[in-house]
Amino acid sequence: MRAAGFTITELVLILVLIGILAAFAVPRLNIEGFERQSFARELTLALRHAQRIAIASSCAVDVTVQADGYGVGWAPGGDCGSGPLPHPSRGGAFSGTGQISSGVGTVRFDGMGRTASGAAIAVTDGPTIIVESGSGYVRS
Image (cartoon, rainbow, N blue to C red):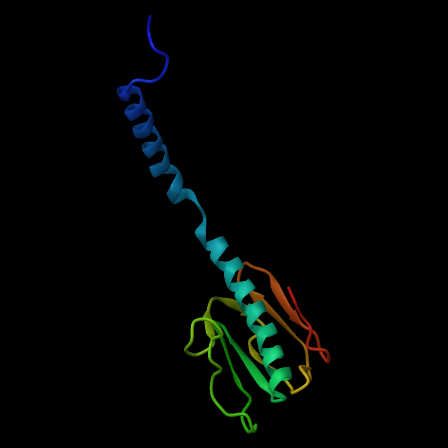
């Protein structure tokens, strides 16, 4: 009577075939699309965090958006300080790197979390992030 199951040779052959298939499949994954979506989500959260910091401190906070990323800092001339805000989890300057195709400029949240003008920030090959004029509501 023969026992049911696989031999060690069969198992090794299957693992080798899976490895060969994985070697061809992994490079075909489009990681750039994931990175763009992640950057857009990070920028959206940075804008919302800047608005909350402005409300909590009653001081103006700027989010400077450039073609290659963004930075969050205190608005110049305010009583709360100057320079970049610290990142809430990583420490260091609160900034991010990614490609932005339009909407470059500065979004300023006043001490009430409002903006004087709206903004539409388009991440390259990704979503557009909207900051509504007046209320400062951020959506993507």
